[in-house]
Image (cartoon, rainbow, N blue to C red; front, side):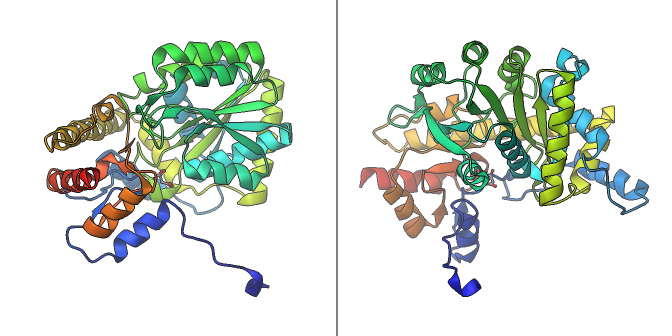
Length: 398
Ligand code: LMR
């Protein structure tokens, strides 16, 4: 049986980490997978998370199964974080959440739910989007298409074209939107566009599916989700896939949740039975650790305050690394402006160089980034920024 298989290429993002590890150049730089790093290149456990983990370790009395929908304190805390504690949706009984293995697991549950609700649904993804979005949609067997999003030549949002595309959609369409810190471009939907998207969704009946994996990495926890909250307050139905990998630094604990907003409490209850049934067919119930940890953290005022401070520090550091990189590139007399990097949000930006130039930088400098020229801003440090800027300037001047 297995002899019939042919080998697949490495995953476009995870493969970069493998190649980087195998490179023995002492000057190598990893700007690949989206993982936060300190100046020293480490990804430490956040202190607030470590304290919450310790409380869990001290208090956990059983390794029996957890309930299928996950840790209730986690689900309640995360719904409040994303939607806002005083959001009327939370008391409407139209919102249901299920803990899932990471953002990817949450997205998978969402796509499978859409397939059950409407097998003819088409998922609209931003052009470009996170590579795994396309893989997940394909694996679910749903149709998908790109909507205009990022102008790679001028490094800006294709706002008018995006709205024109949305104006043509209808009730069989689902629009996958990045809640904040767009991956891979870093280019976010500005505050004034969210109400327009909301109006189009209400008028034409398409369903928004929000992927929010970087809340707190853009401006702050509240500002980053203002647009999303407005949209969700207007539409009858929506899905939200939330990840705790980045803002809680829980990458390996695979911690996330899928939230459905339904037209009525009855419809919400029915959707929940399907999400639980889909999860049961794939993995039964979610891993416990990450959700239990976040549940403890968000249920404790002091730990939450500490976490918010740590999150704000990560966010501020990435902002300053953006500015540093732009200054270093401009100091090398390159022809183009990189000012757009300062305007963008979160972990990523496109350098705007060709796949050949990306490969040349990898071959000649051992600097690793996605083929699209997406870089992980957190991989930059004071000690490697000159090396990175030299490499980019060199390939641009060739
Ligand atoms: C990324 O985009 O680099 C991260 O979200 C990690 C991943 O799983 O792709």
